Length: 261
Image (cartoon, rainbow, N blue to C red; front, top):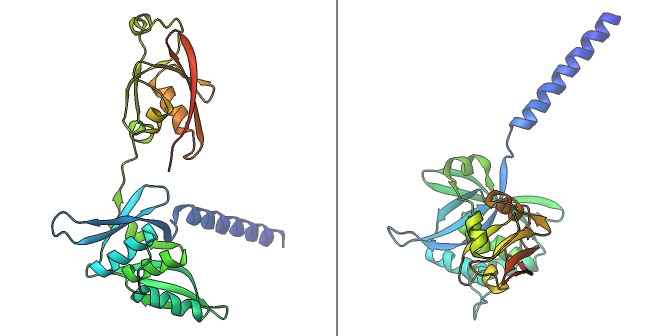
């Protein structure tokens, strides 16, 4: 009896380990996306709706028709038509019938054509409706419903997005502070980075930071070189205040600014 008990325990442990391994290796079947806008492709000047994952790692371009592109643009810019258009009418019918849009999924790609599904809730029942991605995206925007894309499609068709450089995010470029530069600017400290450029229209420019400033701290954390400066900025979440201490005109000064999403 004891041997059977041991065998059963070993089998249970092996099954558990296999399930844990599978759960770690298997990617989520769908990835939530955001609508980043509508563009025209460079070749045929045809409209393309651009979706991107919430982490900003990959984008998925989907070619659509002009009426659907116009409808998506209106939703993104909160522009109401003078009279209801087709998507407005459909959304009104759903609302009047008390049918809620739960989510939209882009589920398949066949012969260069994407397929989507609208997931609706009616009398506490979930209903799937076949749809074109363009129409489904408009309804999702109007309903404030999430949009998901098959992880397999995103892996195969998605375009890797380059992460924004520090200059693009904060509008500032810095360089290592050498002893000769410290002497030139009259800085007697040992730690800091030199601001080499501030981009016009950036949050850094609006805060008053200028080329020639020597940044010594970011949110009270000392920075000794460019790498530490970039790491300090990377640790700050978008929308949170950035407090920068810098040396200018023989004294330390401080400014605070917020980087918009």
